[in-house]
Image 1 (cartoon, chains in turn cyan, red, green, brown):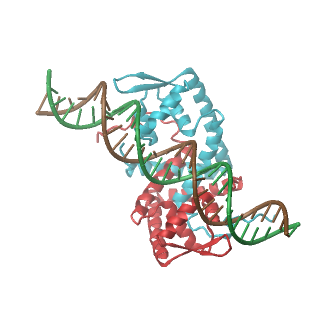
Image 2: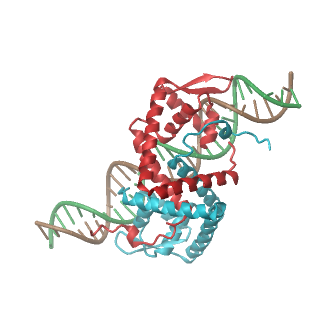
Image 3: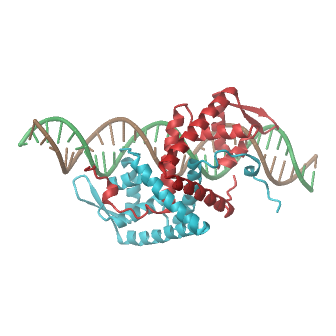
Amino acid sequence: MDQPETPEDRLRDPVASHLGYMLRRASAVVMARLGEALAEIGLRPVEGTILTLVGANPGCIQSDLGRMLGIKRANMVPLIAALASKGLLEKSPVDGRSLALSLTGAGEAARARVDAIMAANEARFEGLLAGQDGAALRSALRSALRLIAEAGDGRAD
Amino acid sequence: MDQPETPEDRLRDPVASHLGYMLRRASAVVMARLGEALAEIGLRPVEGTILTLVGANPGCIQSDLGRMLGIKRANMVPLIAALASKGLLEKSPVDGRSLALSLTGAGEAARARVDAIMAANEARFEGLLAGQDGAALRSALRSALRLIAEAGDGRAD
DNA sequence: CGAATAATGCTATTGATCATAGCAATCAAC
DNA sequence: GTTGATTGCTATGATCAATAGCATTATTCG
């Protein structure tokens, strides 16, 4: 073969087996691929997630979305504004302060494409793994996140 | 109990079971905890990783480190400079252009503390999981990253 | 009812992270 | 020796998340 010999071959990497490091790298790769795919319809991963979330919870308010996604109120503003200015989201006042979010027709169409792209991305990476590893990864991550949540990552706004 | 009812109880989250999303969240939590712990000795996660890496590969050059960590050459400069100005790293020219990196005495002491902190962080999260889940998560992540690497995330500088 | 408290959306600002472009010096190869 | 690649570096811009603070409105409670 005579490959070009990357530094990874030559150097020792003691952190390569660390959980945090592996999570970070894997997350980066998967999110990068998702970003590329979503860029073709002019959306970023966060925006795709918001569309999906609003579609599943019509009438929700952006503070709730922020709490679910771990995004601060202040940072939700431009996100929602961008989606609204694209004609994908609608805000209708429910309170004097809260705005109920819902998808427009175009937003619903976009959400459908987002779901397809996300499903394809999932399938792509789950296909890379042996069926057993994919299931193991998914279930281990699920219980990890559940336990972490219970152990209180309680960060308020 | 009568808990405060978070949005997570009230709203549906269709992306919660997505691999990319779970990876991202888990990574964020683990890295945040690591960041808090390392902040107590005045280091950030990247800096701790670099110390560990240089300790395991004395004489390596920063371009190699950058390639291993997925950090661009231009962004390695201030990282290495900061560690050097703290007296933790030493640069000695090996080439006319390359600088061999090694730990100073203080750097070696810092590396030991970093290793202890990282190990404690690992243990903390692996302890949260049932022994089986922890091992499953680790091995699934390992093979996932290996396969992803083979499938070519080949990004040059 | 009226006052204190909390929640919501928003602005403005900062800092951290990352990417791009380009440059001078040096090494390696032909 | 000339060409091409590598290394460290500067400068700059884009993106993203965190903080502080504000005006408006809900809610709670005396």
